[in-house]
Length: 230
Image 1 (cartoon, rainbow, N blue to C red):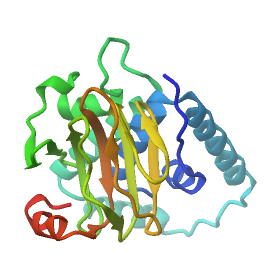
Image 2: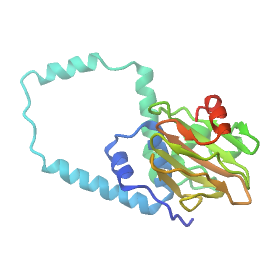
Image 3: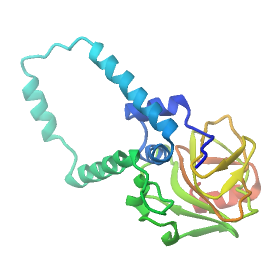
Image 4: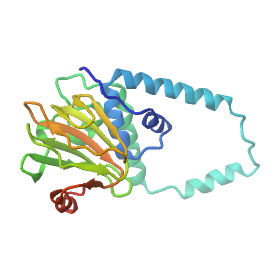
């Protein structure tokens, strides 16, 4: 696997600090499981963060600290919320290992869809373009989903109101930024406008997370947006 497109430094810092949404963190974790370069960068970022923490002076502890902690425990969210958070943490924690089979499913993703892309239930947007929503929390009405586009087909042209992460799992596409193949990630902000065109002989399947709705520039895009949640 020859990965040429990597994560932005700010994205890596946000991931290491744990300040990302569940949806964005899943895409980052999947890319890291596939990309040794970004995996090493995460390790370096974690090491720097650890050294910074060690250099901090300890904060003074008040006499009623124990009582405050016990009071906070009484206000903990319900068990289902805790179990969901734990499941997400477990999935993300697997990001250092690439699934040791012939599957093209990154290890953090197999908890959501299993170990094969062949079993995904797709919904059609337009002929040749399909999506599958994932149960990940997003910000500001963003989306977390798989996208499948047939050879020779293109995504509708769009820009972004926020950030978009797109990880290629199978196939390839070309857009205004360059060519993206399996393992590559497009780390885009609101300054980018593009129209990915599939240039592989097989369907291009991507894992996508956005933190805000896309901004389509064509009438068709604006028509299908309310129906698809993009």
